[in-house]
Amino acid sequence: MALLEIKDLHATVGDREILKGISLTVNSGEVHAIMGPNGSGKSTLAQVLAGRELYAVTGGKVIYDGKDLLAMPPEDRAREGIFLAFQYPVEIPGVSNMYFLKAALNAIRKHRGLEELDAMDFLSLVKDRMKLLEMDQVLLNRAVNAGFSGGEKKRNEIFQMAVLEPRLAILDETDSGLDIDALRTVAGGVNALRSPERAMIVVTHYQRLLNYIVPDYVHVLAEGRIVKSGGKELALELEESGYAGLGIVDEEEAVAKL
Amino acid sequence: MTAVAEQGLRETAFQRFLELGFPTTHDEDWRFTNVAPIARMGDRLRFSPLAKNGCLSPGFPPEAQQYLGKYAPFQNHAFVALNTALFRDVTYIHIPRGQIVGEPIQIRYDSPSEISHPRTLIVVGPDAHCTIVETYSGTGSYFTNAVTEIVAGSGSVVDHYKVQLESSSAFHVGVMFASLGRSANFSATSISLGGALVRNEVSVTLSEGTDATLNGLYLVNGAQHVDNHTSIEHAKPHGTSHELYKGILDGRASAVFNGRIIVRQDAQKTDSKQTNKNLVLSDEAVINTKPELQIFADDVRCTHGATIGQLDAESMFYLQSRGIGKQDARSLLTYAFAQDIIDRIKVQSLKDSLERVLFEKFHERAH
Image (cartoon, rainbow over all chains, first blue to last red; front, side, top):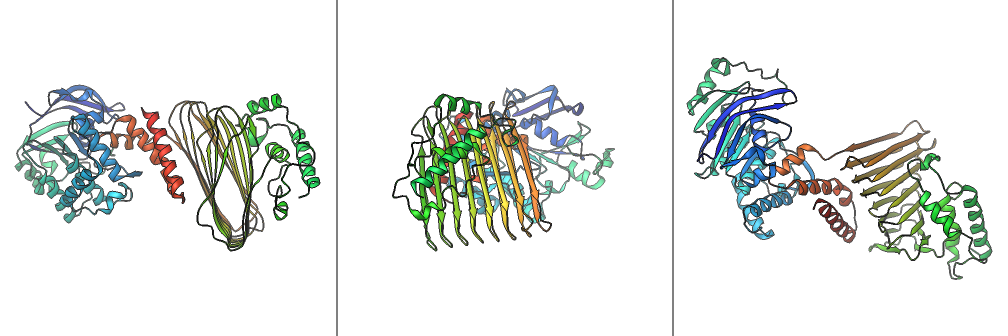
């Protein structure tokens, strides 16, 4: 059974249709890259899968692990093993990273019938995972993402993923705003988390990230539809000929991001 | 103060109270706070002046007598007039010149009766340091009408905390006046959590180079009403004032923030900043916020800002997307909103106990 099955998914924001019939099957252990120009619907797809209420699903269905994903509130999706690494991680002043992550992990563990971790066990888990991302421990005691640099925020997302151990990770433009060193570290963290039990959907505009996180499949999204799918070589093709080579207009700056 | 002088003060104050009567919503200062329930209680109790000869104990220090009633003007304030006429005892704290008191001084007013008029006089000598925590609490229905006078000498450092934990059916009017000396460093923190109908007033007058900080946190739920009136008067040059009041409103509750800043003509180079932020968690809660700036000097910097908002949808989604339930996410963000006021509290024991109280409040609300 596929871990995730998206069938003819339509979604709107306001009265604008953004996803116009997406179908995609993801199995455990696979890494799928979703590429496309700005405004193609990549981030919308990521957020719809995580349960953002801003978007209204107007058609199609999503089956995750045999369950109707769209019927679940965002917290249940997370507890069932879905993790979205945000393109723009949210700053939450007044809530420490540590407290936040412990609350999240224990909510997930409780849902899975596991015992909640006490402070000591949690700390040792966290220290272990921080090494993976070469994170500064100081960040743990700071408020969630507050005053973090762009790179620190992205690192923090993957660090959270390492702690929460999802079954399906969706990385939304995790490469944007990262310098090459940070990109290597973050990609290294992601690669360390690849496993036969875990699937990943990597959303990106540029091919660069895929040099470090090598996907099994690449899908090109344009105007709310998957217009081409292939193996990892499709990403290289795009790198050479650009989206225009596929006849896709890349209105990089023209389309206002939602 | 001789018994005769005391009696004179009380009689004048009582006379003034009778002339003023309880304020109504036609008074600009009480526009959003209807004290009719307190007035009805007053009618029933029929206030009468205390027996002749005063009631301050003969041992009340003569040096304190020159201060009592001097900083809390009752001419235009019915509740202050009433307190001045009827208070039974005075909690008097005197920190002599240069003395540094490390431990916070705790004053607890647990309502003793249906109506009480707690009176506090704090006199801090020049260059003395102290921290005062005034806590108000009680059980059942009652009315507390408190007046606190503070005189802070030049170069003194005074941190004052008022913690209002009255019962959920209590009325509370608490008025504080502080006269701050040259280069004094003063902070007043008002934490208002209890009461059915509450009015907190903080009124400070700054001298040359005085630094004053006014922080406040008010939390209302159900049908609670809390009114915060603050007044900062810059009377002399080079004064600095910072004010941050935050409110959390839920249910059908209502709250008022009215922040008056007066910069006298003589008070050049004043630097004053006022901020009021409100988090409104329900559709029915009401907040009235109003800055009131009266600036008579020309070389000053005064800024003010007020916000009224709901829980941030993106933050909610972020927390939920990590597995944190909707209600827990709400209480976490609500707690976070209050956090920076709590962080500014320098008394660790107070900070700890408030963190506990707030956590329980939000948690119980969430479940």
